[in-house]
Length: 169
Image (cartoon, rainbow, N blue to C red; front, side):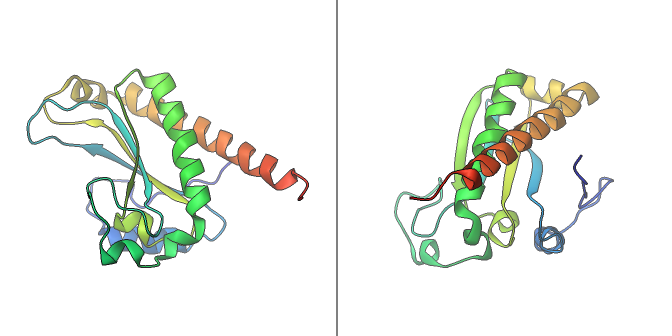
């Protein structure tokens, strides 16, 4: 029942800024950016899901807060929804794909920072000399990722609907 819009349908490079602009043209949507990771050491494996680090919270790769951690970005208007979406989709991926759980993480990637709708970025495994690479190469695995995303989005939508039906105190 969802209308899916793809930023691309072939293997061409679309700049990250243009992907965010594309997402912003769909005001009542959610944005799911699907990627596959790489490792410089070759030993990494597993799934990660990223949402925008809330204002005043460091990204996962930073130990200390910096000025940029306090900047208000478009994506911050949906901080609770971003976290809820990341949690439900990541849980569906972990439940159904059997790869290592590398967690839900916070970052300030352009595609989640510059959007005005709820959004996440998924790393669906590692393409650099790992068992993940063999799975990623199969259409069946990629279809399973798509199904997990759908399951997670459905759970997110249910949670949002249930939250809006609760009586206010």
